[in-house]
Amino acid sequence: MYYEFFGFREPPFSIAPDPRYLYLSERHKEALAHLMYGVQGQGGFIVITGEVGTGKTTVCRCFIENVPDNVDIALVLNPRLSARELLSSICDELGIAHPSGSSIKKLIDLINHHLLESHAAGRHKVLIIDEAQNLSADVLEQLRLLTNLETAEKKLLQIVLLGQPELQDILDTQELRQLSQRITARYHLDAIARDELPAYLRYRLSVAGQKSEFFTSKALNQLYRVSRGIPRVINLVCDRALLGAYSEGSHEVGKAHIVGAAREVLGKRRLSLRSAPPSQNLRIASAVAAVAAAVVMLWVAVEQFRGEVEGSAPVAVAQTEARKAAPPTEKTESQSKETSTSPTSKAIEVVLPAKTEPKVTTKPEADQSATTLFALEPTFEQTSQELGNRLSDEGKNQTAAYRQLFERWSFDYVSTEWPYACEFAETVGLRCLHRQGNWRSLRQINRPAILSLYDTGGNPRFATLIGLEGNTATLVLDGEQLDFPVDVIDQFWLGDYSLVWRVPPYESGLVPANEAVSEGAWLSAKMMQLISTHEASVSEQDKLIAAPLKEQIRWYQSTMGLIPDGIAGAKTLIQMNSDLYPSIPTLSPVQRQTAGVR
Image (cartoon, rainbow, N blue to C red; front, side, top):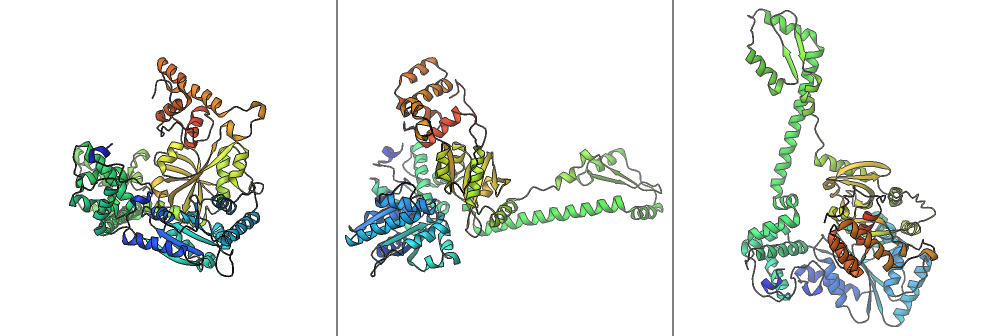
């Protein structure tokens, strides 16, 4: 790409949490100091919060690389687990052998024994949980109980919670006050300041092997305006801006490059919301509210006038009698035509000629466009408020969401028999997949999923996504099916979702031993089927059939827009299922490709 053009050894603005690229602003230094101080303390909790993309995970990676030699780290990156699953993950990270299906008590006993042995050997154990705002109250309480494991001098386990700002609100609830009292260090990581931006860019460029200045002063101003100092957004925009400059053959990144890059990375709507100053947004909102109020008042006036004309004959008669004294006025044909087609009289036409009895004429029902005019669609704010109101009372039960999810697969999930939904999934040939992404990733996977939402108070809620057509998502909340625009749901969704997918027979364990096939044999057979479906050229089919299995998988991944790594991972197998099994439940109808369509 542009790396050689600008003289970089490697991409300078990758969003991977590489500790080498951690620019230690004053805020990041303080966050790292809190972690280093906490690990030398007497146990308990350390809480580091920050907005999405401010560098929490990168600070954590830097901390892991610089901990004292006697410290052992257990890192949990996926906190969307039950209490038992989390304890099992901690055992895995600490290297504690434990039988499959161990009870919570058994797991705690094993952890306690391991911590005592480590303390006797002079080792200090630290558990780090990233994205901790996704932990449920029950799991947080179980973590608190782990800190009860102690000697007379110190706690045996130090727990570090990294999360978004909602984590602070969760920890401040009455339900978790005991845990909150055990927090020995807290720090909120803010975005970098405007005057730190040039140093931030220079540092990343120098690590990548280039000390030149590529960004103009106007570009820097625009970059900070669109990014608000969020490191991840800065990296995304700079990477795309450098690509834009490279495509033009320019070694200088100007304001126009930043604007174009931000539009691609952030989208037009989000970019306009970021760029508009608060006062301007307020004026726009006020204007919209004023127009809406005026329309409603006009509608009320029209309806009142309609009622007076149609239901109050004495009023109409009185008006007619009052006009008797005046000479009758006759409308010309052109005037009558103008009146009948004017916007204010299109729906209701009142004609009061010189006769003694008034005549009221109403347009045919099909022409009642005034009624259509005033049948207003709900605004974004109204729809957002509706979903917020529902989430305040609905979606609290994750088990109910899983029940709806399995129902899409025609399975009856009974939680009393299977407390853990993902264990039940394995018994019916399915497997859970927990991811963080966006609507694009959901459309690509195209499977019903459970969205982890948050109400206005920061409380977790669970909705089953069963449909996704255009800009409309169909959710099931507490058994009720609802349609909402995806940008409304975005107000309550941080990107976490869970789904189940059909496992190939060589992994399901449900196939009898005498019928079992190996992974290679199954994949080869299915690749033959997919090659004949997606490749029209007979000569190309012959080449692909003769190619090694890994090359066939790469071809299929490229054809379907996946990363062509040649590994049949979860996303590749999910896409294969969509092609091979039409009865599999999907969010939207599968646009199946036929031979000849690439």
